[in-house]
Image (tube, rainbow, N blue to C red; front, side, top):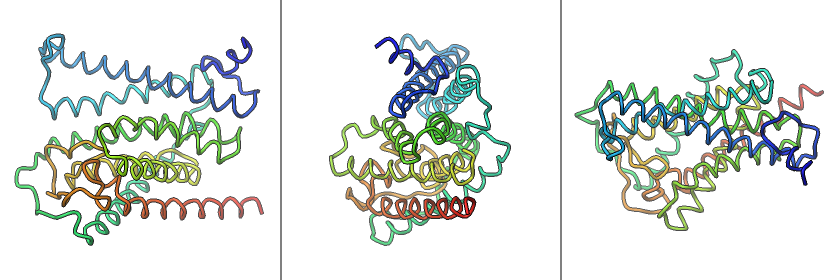
Length: 307
């Protein structure tokens, strides 16, 4: 038992163990970095409130939009925790984590995310389950720019943890389906709390969407040998859904300021109800098709390199 505990401990960089034990070890590393990053982020938020003269111990905080913004930027703590873990505990180069110099992948991922979101929303609009109500008249552009920066950090934080820390550390040591499954598991687990209060049908559809979008992120990472494309797609999807279209994001209401006024028409599986389009069966189909396409591209390129 002592040897088992020593092997799966996330505080060493041993990899000479069965695949199942190595997966457990990386899942524990994810939990460690997530917890450490959350603590760092909360410290930043508390520090900001103290500097801002808020008596947070008495429940005094900034406005809801400001606290949301602080929460997004505080996720930089998770990036810091995962990078420090990789360098200090894993003792590996950041390039092995997918943090390469090919940062242009951010823009490739952003383009893919924009197209993917447009197709999903357009398809749902054709069913009449989402309505377009015109451009917003009181858009706060400076706040939107700040939110964009926050979502860039938020998307990157999740990708550093799920794709960098888990997928990239496992892909060369265990069968690829196992590495992708482990990455998908932690990604889905990380969003599970967003389903609180949702009806079972939306939970089922939403979890399926999390699985297939996680596969999209993983296949992009494998195809580009970098996490930047996944970061770009993740960040742009969240920002555009919330701050450009004003639609619900993973169970949370759209941002207080958005460029466009769009609203769900009723609650149904076509628009995902209160959870948002990420629980829509239409989005499930579109994103699943994208995942299959990316997997086929990755397999084809991999086969050609081995030939």
